[in-house]
Amino acid sequence: MNSELQQQTAQLIIDTLNLDIEVIDIDPEDYLFGEGLGLDSIDALELSMAITQTFGFQLRSDDSKNREIFRSLNSLSKHIEENKTK
Image (cartoon, rainbow, N blue to C red; front, side, top):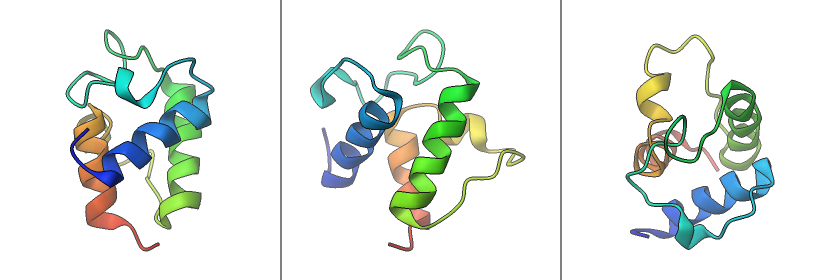
C-alpha cells in the first residue's frame, strides 16, 4: 500500500462490503469491479454512502467520471484525497 489514505480506503471497502479479505489482498491497481474484486452496482452504492459518512463529500450517481473514480483502489483513493472535507 502506498499511503495511509489508501490503506484506510481499502479497509473501508472491506468493512462496508463485509469482504473476507485483508487490506494487503487488495492490489492498488486491480479493478474493483468485474475481474478484480468483483464488486457490483449495489456495492458501489453502499461504498458511496460510506465514503460520504467517512470523508464528508458525496459521490453522485450521475457523475460521468464514476467509472474512472471506481476503477481501482488507487483511483478511488486519489479522488477521496482531492475531495475529502473530513
